[in-house]
Image (cartoon, rainbow, N blue to C red; front, side):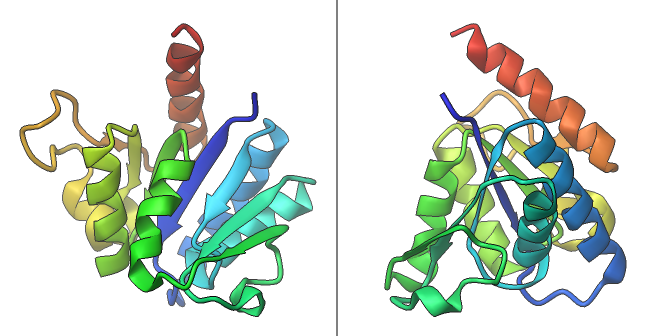
Length: 170
């Protein structure tokens, strides 16, 4: 079975370090055979898709509009929803693991959905946003675990592989 990693983060970032991080992450995830699922637009989503495509990976986008053309150029499978921000729930439900990089209010909603649906969440706090504010914490008391924290691409990959090794045992 294909393993799907949802990557969430700021769609409008201009932070070159954040873009480079997301692109490298996409490459390393694709090299390990993971399918990349995002909201399909710009910023972190575009960068992770670009990195995945450079490594021959598969990218899927859950788009807020009803227009496939809204997808960034590195998306293989654009899924238009016409749901606006409500599509964030689908981005989370489609992934086996959720990786949050930085992020503003859209990312916050995805982190909350991931928490409620008991999805493992890895936060990259070094770019600020909700990943920094919630990394290492609980969103509320409905779960016993905390949001994992990873500061480098290598740490993210290691945590993803640990999570999938546990998931494979169930």
